[in-house]
Amino acid sequence: MDKQEKSVGQMLKQANHLKRAERLDEAIALYHQVIEINPHFAWAYHGLGNALVKEE
Image (cartoon, rainbow, N blue to C red):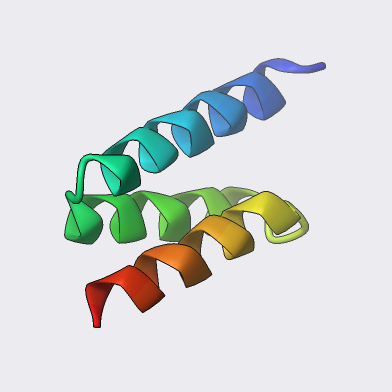
């Protein structure tokens, strides 16, 4: 695992934490950052979708 993959993983973990804490705007922004860095990271899309559904 290279340094970028590790940081993306940490960012995803932080976004998931923010989502669970109901800090949805922050979580959504972080998911978008993860997707921008690695658009092939499916879990980022999954988390983003869940956060967007919770936001409604």
